[in-house]
Image (cartoon, rainbow, N blue to C red):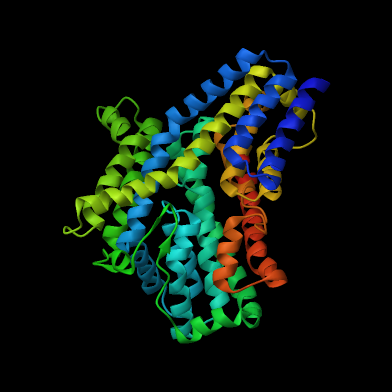
Length: 457
C-alpha cells in the first residue's frame, strides 16, 4: 500500500477517535472533519473533496433518512402510550415463573427494535425492580437481562437507527438484513439469559444501598423518557394498549418489508410483485407503521397538539442520528473518490485473514475506542464500503460484521453503560463484570454466527 493513502486513512481514523473522546466536537463534525482530512492528505483536489462530502451525505440520507425518522417516531409513541410496558407484561406471562430472566431478555429485544436503548431502559427498568420484589429473583439478573436484550436488537435489527444506517451505507437490502439480524438474535437471547442468571446473583450484594431500598420497598417509576422529551406519569399510563395492539406498529412494517424481499427472491415476475415492492418499501412500510401507532396506540381523546408534540419529540431525537449517518456516508464517498479505499482493499487482500473479519474488526476497534455502538456501526460501514468490490464480500455479510463488531465490551465511554449500571446500582468492578461482561459475551456469540453466515452467503 502506498504511503500517502495509508497516512490519510490513519489520520482520518485518529481524528474521529480523538475528536469524539477528547473534544466537544461530537460524532457528526468528527466524521465531516475526518472526510476533509482524508481528501486533502490523499491528494484529492479541494473542490472534489467538498463534492464528495456533499454527494455522499445526500445519497446516504436519500436512502435512509426518512426511515430513521419514522422509526424513531414509532418508538416515541410506544413509550408515551404505555405500549412498551404492555409488551413487557405479555412476555412475562408467556415465559412463566422462574423464567423471569428469559422474559426480561425477550422484552428488551422486542421493545428496542423501534426504541433507543437509553430511553427504553429508563421506561422499562421499574419492571425489573417490581419483578425482583414480587418474585424474589435476583434484581441484577433481571436488570442485566433487560438491558442486554435491548442491546441485541439495537445492534442487529432495523428499524433501529444503527442497522438502518449500515444498510444504507453498504447498500444492503433491508429485508435481508432484518431476516439475518433476527436469525442471529435467536442464539444471542439464551446467551444473555444464561450469563445474567450466572452473574446476577453474584453481584446483588454490590448494589448501591439507595437502589436496593427502591427494589425492596418500591417507588413510583421515573417518568423522564429519552428521545428529546419528558412525559408525565399520566401520559405514560393512560389507557395503555394491550400487547397485540402495541406490537402492530412493529410487526406490520417488518412483515411488509420481509414480504417484499421474499417476493423478489421467489416470484419477481408475479402480478402482485409490484404491489409487494410498493408496500414493502421501507419508507411506505414505516409510514403505515407510524399511522398504526398514532391511531391504535393513543386514546381517541388524545389532543391533536399533544400528538404533534410527541411526533416532534421523536423527530428531534432522530435528527442527530440522521446527521451522523449522512456524515458517515460523506466519509465513505471521500474514501472512494480519493482512492484510499482501493489502496486499502489491495493491502487487506494481502492479509492472512478471511475477508469477513475485516468489517468486524473495524467496528470492534471503533466501538472500543469511542463507545457509541451507533457511531461504531456508521463509521465501520463507512470504512468498509470502499473495500467491498476488492474483498468480494457479500454486502450482507459485511453489514452483519459491522453490527456485531459494534457490540464489543461496553464500558465507561458508552452512555448506555452508565444508564444500565446507574439504574442497576452497580459501580467499578461489579459494573464491568455485569454489563461489560454480558456485552462481550454477545459479541463473541455474534462472531460465531457471523462465521457461519460467511460460509453460507
